Length: 342
Image 1 (spheres, helix red, strand yellow):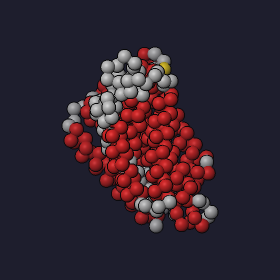
Image 2 (image 1 turned 60 degrees about the horizontal axis):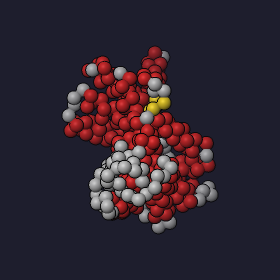
Image 3 (image 1 turned 90 degrees about the vertical axis):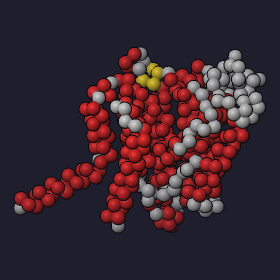
Image 4 (image 1 turned 180 degrees about the vertical axis):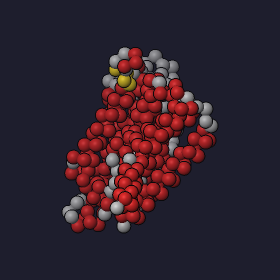
């Protein structure tokens, strides 16, 4: 009897560990770095981590849409770069010496921001059409888009009179989105963090409370069963890729605002960090599984790795090794769970 109780207790512990593994890893990571350097838990450190996480979280949420449908998106980073350049090129101060558009009149700050988001949405639309209508595998479709978008961005960035010079001199009403905050002193909250939280809430609503969200999970779980049940798979995939593209566009705008500039190399490899954060956050590589809280925690884990290990003086090369091991372990754990269910 006692043995059976022990077995039951062991299964309960195993079930708890499996369900909340990502949160346990996050807590242990914070505890470990704090033991090494207690000042890591300061308000400034937390603030910096949240700021760095914000754009990455928005990109990861966009990628999560695609992964849940059992797809992938390699174009996310380059779309971020394109939209960062587009928004920054139209929001320079009028007295800046190297203006991208010397004769451009003063625009309302939201016009270039909206235009950049639309550019991202159009890139997502192209991805969706290629995947849904031409039946090209998502990996190949988004690989092609990644290359093409970088080429378009480089051509735009190289136009006269800019000639591939880094875009700087951004207006304060634009950079405020990335560096400004609400409140004062210790109790201030950066605008960029509030935007990321708002986006996460909207995505959570889409995932859990809308027909598109339910269809997304159904497509990722079993695309043939989704078709049989009457779901218009192609139309839903196009919508999903468009939403993802719009999120990349917003992230590009915020990245330009946060850094105070832009080049055509912005966003390089961001898609890999986003995919890694999603996988570590419990988004299944086989499709049909994933949550917004999991994605957000996955992003936080990688932000803490980047910031925390730098904070305690660990070499960036070791950071890459740690990140790689975490990614492989997360995928192996995910595949093990999937195999067990089968």
